[in-house]
Image (cartoon, rainbow, N blue to C red; front, top):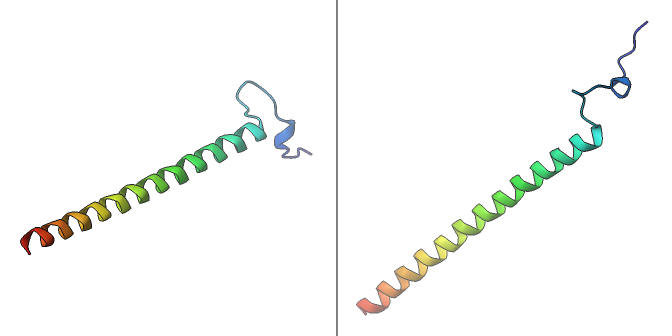
Length: 61
């Protein structure tokens, strides 16, 4: 009888489970950082648009 045991498989093509978990964690962290950066960029742009509109209103008055 043959059992499926991933830890028993070895060879040049296998990746250590902990290394794979680290890769997944790094990728998830990179995605989260990208989302935060994008959110910040959008918030800064909205603020600048709002400030520019305020300046235009102030100049017109």
